[in-house]
Length: 251
Image 1 (tube, rainbow, N blue to C red):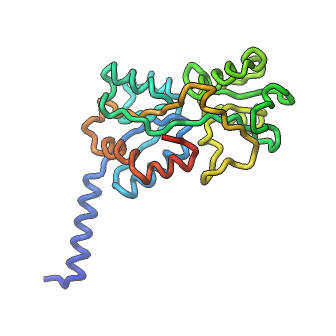
Image 2: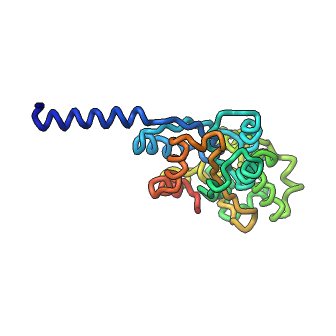
Image 3: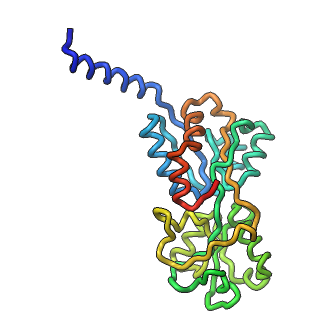
């Protein structure tokens, strides 16, 4: 018989091999605004469970169309709550799996320090040429941006200066590159370790637009996938929520 230390090492090796054999993979469609936190969550999820999450980032509206055309996603992390609800009603998603994993915050942001004041008055004062927003037909943050301009009575004045990103990721790139001096982006895109990057920003009051509730849903094709089920649970864990909060989301 092997001495105890060797027996223990052999037992651990068997356990690790068994865990590897049981590990599964799930393809996850992730709203662009949630890119940074989801990358961290996926890494921690793999470390803690052995399962792998294959991430694709893009516009929620495009993911909806792709899912209907048979794209092999197992989970949708949407930028809104209406798309997952629609998928559930159409039989593409598991209705009782749906939950709000984060509530987003809209921010008017510029890479130029001192350009944006803490009330967003720069929108009235001018001194800039272009403002980036996400396509409101595809991106909830784009719709929230238009609602904000409506609330301020500035839609007509600002519209000629708009440059439109396909999704919130591209919108951020327009602003970060300086091609647009201002951008309505997700707060999560300009935060690091709980603080806004060095720049200038105005966090838009939530009262100026509809709540940006971001829902997750398990897609019907993955209802028996252990990795998909595990990730849906993991997103509601304290570890995941700590990461989500660090990027400026609320619940």
